[in-house]
Image (cartoon, rainbow, N blue to C red):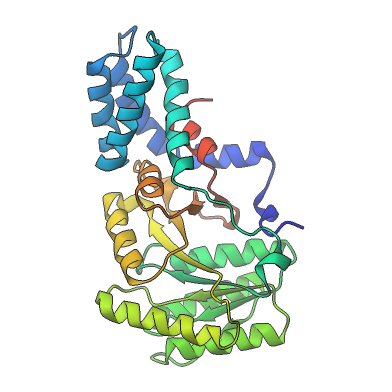
Length: 321
């Protein structure tokens, strides 16, 4: 069984969740794009200028917006005459190509036997972004697929983080390894991996401190956790997943930069997209960080955490079938 195949529900179910989750972002972006091309029969510089404003206002980000506009200018120039219907198709095509070139949904090892056992994910992110909830949802989906999961409560700085993880552990039916508040996070990670390895677990998810107290301390703490885990499993962690709150828009960019400077991030999860009109931030982060977006959070239910698929996402947020 492919490692991540359990995320694959029917295409109809996935699309329905995606469309509903991105509805606020889609309505916001569609209204702006509609204004940009209203009454136009061809795509000229005025349309592209208005589209640029629409994309920036939708939190796609200035750098990514300029790249999109440049690609569209070249495409329109090459194709000579482009009506608005064809322009929609071109826009989806060029955004998807841009994200593909920047490995926005780079492939991961899907076969558990290839990835090693257990597969260890260290999860990072500031408080309030949905980090612990994302861990719980991932644990639920792995458990539903018949995987043996262990959770490590290495965010020992905040008591509520340990309690929240334990609640998820009870709800999902997976063990949570913890210590007293204020304990050494690396010690918790070490104990978690030892227990998981001894009990032949498939997946380990390690929660870490959700604070940017300062970059040096954060770097030292995360580096120590990784070094200690390697004493148990030499190639751990297999993945360092940064969780970002999509509803914060451009602030998510800054968090991503801060954590990328503090430790090597290998993948991103962007949460809380269902309650915001700022879903365009996913396109910007995917493109600018050069770190693949792995998951997107589209609602409260565990199954509302989806694998990011660039074309489906771009089509949904632009309202183009």
